[in-house]
Length: 155
Image (cartoon, rainbow, N blue to C red; front, side, top):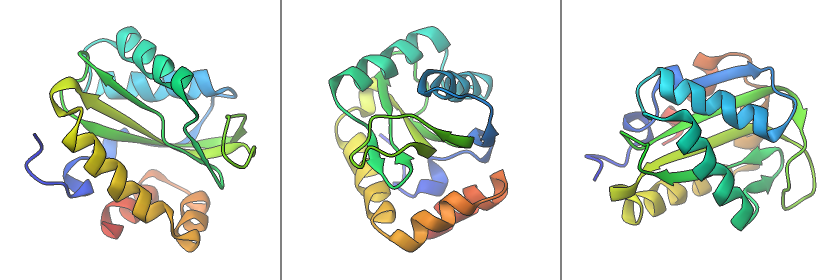
């Protein structure tokens, strides 16, 4: 279990990427999975990526207003975290408003954290994302520090 539910204790600045080059949901998810591997949060990119895609098949993760919250619960996750990506241009994603996505919050949840921790993180993020002004600010973020600061200071 996580010591604290503060997002600043869950999100690592190194796992915040702006201007992701991918033009498809799969490319963007793979880029975020690779980043999680490079920073030591997961130990198997392909396994975690497969778990994320399997979860995508279960139901939509596009919340609307340009935001998606894909997630994977996996044996490959070493430490539960959220990787945040902002794409160079909006990408197609099945979402509640049928609009493309620009900001992705990828939840990487280790199996032992799969129930309580996962739900608490989703609740925290959902509360933040319910604020339309905050959503606009997220989409306008120009660099990793700005995006990271917005989310961790908001908590």
